[in-house]
Image 1 (tube, rainbow, N blue to C red):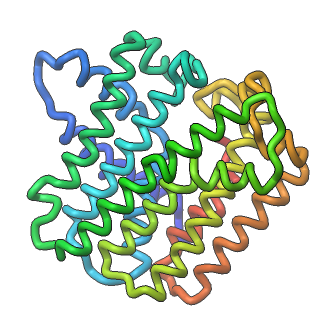
Image 2: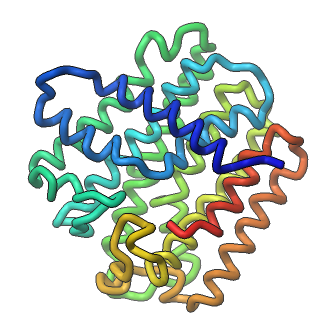
Image 3: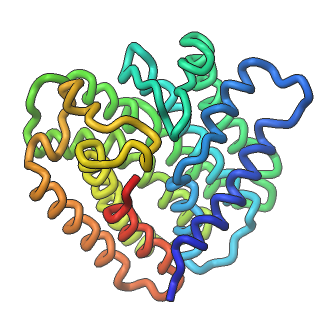
Length: 298
């Protein structure tokens, strides 16, 4: 029986050690590094880097841990930068993230902006470091870098965030809401799975299957997030509940109602699992993550 809790704990420990090493250790840490560390090392699910590692495992081909961990760390750095900027007063103006004060509250707004910028830049420093590309097929590595850059930019996460801002206090259609979330949340989740699969040398057929899994998982994760913002326990989530409604955000519970949203999350999870039907036991972590994404309480 696959134990997801043990798997996630072990993977998060590896990821956290690597992230800490990339930030560097010094007795007199600069203000900007302290702000970066405050957000990057605040815990969290590490879903995106774990998905990268799990996707590589699912393919089953041996791959060096160095490039995999570099890709995993870069994903978490990009994700954390996006959270820092999302929390800013000009955006969502959140005071708590991962159970601690958000970066602009703990430091100040200019420092938080720069900390986010620095993490985004560090992600690509990590991906271009000699130890990351050592021994890798360079064309494959180029594809990995492209996956992250395109998912994080104006055709992915940034476009999704822009649509989210523009649609506040107006009701989107179900199709428009899905398109928004496939960009804002889904793009980086999809990139995580594809990056891991590419690093493991997945053939095109396997990459297509994993891409389908990732697309369904990304949307299921966002639907579950929307539900948690309505009925989740702030003490467990590490952030406030009810903020989406207060800001006039477009969410699945607001559009469909809670019951229909919960049913949609389950359907999406089931489709993600169905996409993995051709994979054997090597994909058990991916299957368990899909179930967890919908059943989680934070």
